[in-house]
Amino acid sequence: MIKFVIAALWIVAATVGAVFYAFQAAGARGDDPPPKPLLGGLDYVSTEIISVPLIRNSTVEGYFLTKLVYTVEPKEMAKLSVPAAALITDQVYSYLYANPQIDFSKQATIDLDKFRNSIRDTVNARVGIDLIHEVLVNQVNYLSKDEVRDNAIKRRSGAEPTEPAMNKVPPPTSAH
Image 1 (cartoon, one colour):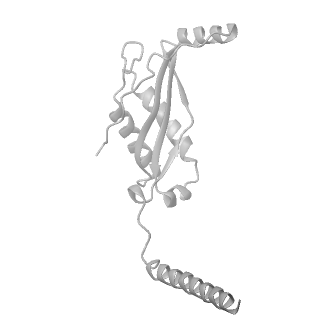
Image 2: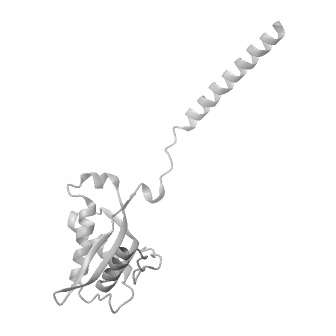
């Protein structure tokens, strides 16, 4: 019986020694800096769906809907006194109203590179630093006023609403 007790104590001592050695070895390697995350520590911030009414000839022709994701440095984001989402929303409105040649009723797509770059550049110019590194398009839709009306009627009657006219957008290409 004493042999079993001595063997058990030997096993416990060997196990404690192995665990202690493992923690010491891991601590020595823990001095290395942690690997940098993808894109150097930028945060990806998603906006809510931004709905912009498109007004032509004093009437609402339809609604431009978009959901964006933008990359920002967390340190710079913390310095803002105005929420970045408000700046992005304002720039989407400004872009669409400053470019009256964009007519979704006659054109199936929008120049996404120009749209993304314009949002990024104007927000960065407005805050005076390179706050936004990249704008990614998560969703882009256009609903004409007739589609909005039809979907409202179908919702009241219990039928499924139709898909927006511009629901599928090709994947974004890198601006770099």
